Image (cartoon, rainbow, N blue to C red; front, side, top):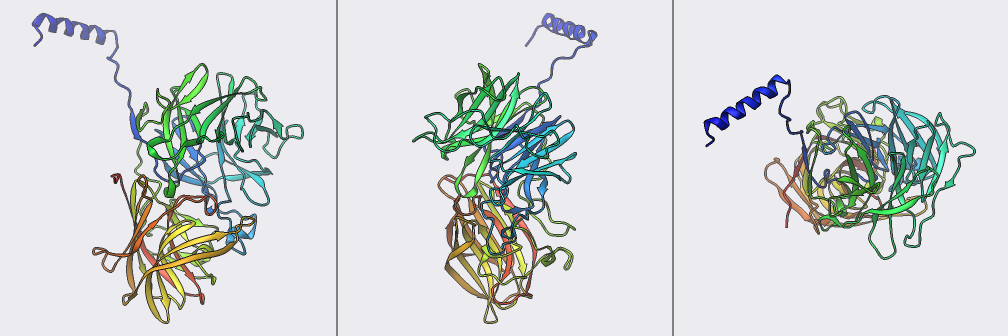
Length: 538
């Protein structure tokens, strides 16, 4: 216990502080995080900032609407606030006619804030091989098309201090755009600013560029000979070079494969952070958050050991809106929640939230042979470490040959579906593996294996998929119920897979209804109930 003289000194000092108009310095607010900050498919990360707001864009390829824009104030809690485009219409494959756009469509994008406007540049990896540039005053609202220009592989849009506009792309290529972004300047085409060295193989991809203290820093992924993927940085005093290279991250965090490809951003206080994705099997490619420290004017990603931290803290006030990347939906709104994306362009006249209020109605509109060719399949991301999705469907108005249900959807899919056969409703658990042509992604065939079937007597049923994305798991388990309380397992657990040669995305919950015999049937989905579990299994 302090004596009275000590207490007098403390009181006197406190009075002096108050008299001088000072207050004892309070500790800064911090946001704690655990990696991955979002355990879901969010590859090809590009980020920009305006004041307190960070905006992140990712790749969703053949999903519509596309190019999701996510917002955060603390770099930890992200929610989708808009999509850059509603549909792509460059060829009939986006409508699942004759061919598909699986694994193509919108690829790695670049988002930038410049002089009161936000810009996005992306190049669909498909015919006619050209790029889109969009802009908006408000990234939570509509985006407007600015121009179509030449194709850039994995581009990074860059506005320099002198007002000139550039695109970094491919392996060490640079192009200068016209000031109105209408195209490439005649004397600014395909400048080569560096060649890969003898340690590298293939493309150096995923260009994302920043300027810091007058220097240009270009982040890319590297595939060195007989080594894992890594993040490299190319640095120069002039935009056209010469450039020098340094490896800034190499890690197989948490037992999963290599980390690589992403971006860097500063906060309003001058602190720097990296957002880099990691391949995690069936769930897809997930974002990892890490500090950036500057060593000899190089940005070094990770902790003091150069590794991705499992946990950390950001010196920004926590801002959790409660919205998540994946959400439940009871379909009682006038519009779908913006967590949903359609598989390819939707046929809007064949789905409704108003024909039967409180239900999502999916009407058949085209006879197709399988789920991969079916229009109006609606999806949301799955999340790790574990998650569960439940749907309730009213199947009273199905027609002969109709197939409706819930899937763990990917190039390798586990499917739980009600099928109308010979006037009866049969619940099936099947596996589907799609085969696509390399040239145009046309569906060559689908390998289907039926694992269990039961006949149904009721017109309303509940379907559930539980997904486990822990290390060495990637398993989906299927259930059905007639009362949403007592669940019966169907089939067997299904191994979910990520295959860049097929859909090139993480596994998703998919709700569908399609016709194999005749059109005109419909199914009403009462709700989609989603839950994520943080507990890891061992």
